[in-house]
Image 1 (cartoon, helix red, strand yellow):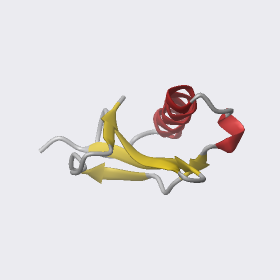
Image 2 (spheres, rainbow, N blue to C red):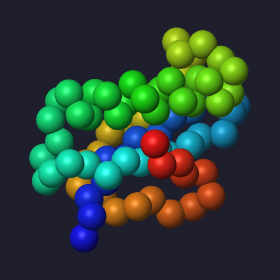
Image 3 (cartoon, rainbow, N blue to C red):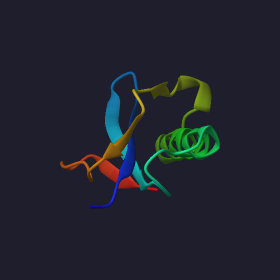
Image 4 (cartoon, helix red, strand yellow):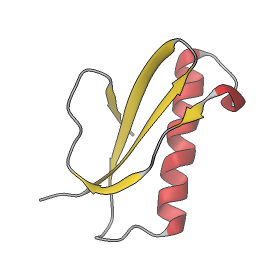
Length: 75
């Protein structure tokens, strides 16, 4: 089974989005997880036309399945 990194992003009353990305191995490096968080933050800010400083970064998780639901986005 493929393993994914997941992390939610939100800001105030804007819709929360859970981002996910396939990880390269069973234990993603700090570089890989950091890039994932940065890419998700940048995408959320750009998609909502807000400053990156306004993005509320949720809990990072690795070794997850693909998250369900409508508010998910693969990056």
